[in-house]
Length: 128
Image (tube, rainbow, N blue to C red):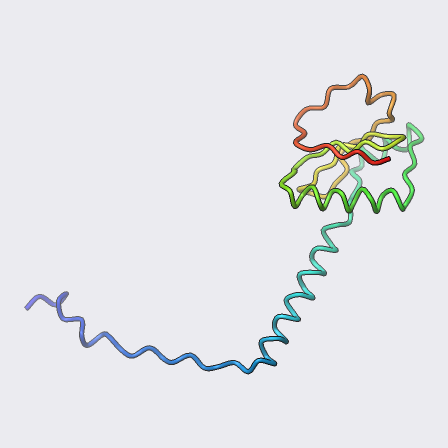
């Protein structure tokens, strides 16, 4: 008899799953939700590259904290929609932002931005 045909001895009954009390499930769900929310909040914070920071300083571009918060929210929204690199246009400046890395890559004032061609951008955000 072919040994490959004799599999009856290797079959065993699978252990029955044990029921987890509902309070344990909700505790695990709550913990997951807390960790997930913390992770999203951590990802929301935009970083400014050294190059972008130098450009902002040399051009005298200042962005208020309230405006940064709006940009961060819109970048998170754009990332959720599949945007990788975005052009963010405000009243005073144009920013090229990597949604993937949550990093401001470069900053131009609006006058400079009018004469530029932006490439490798798959999303644009207008903020007044």
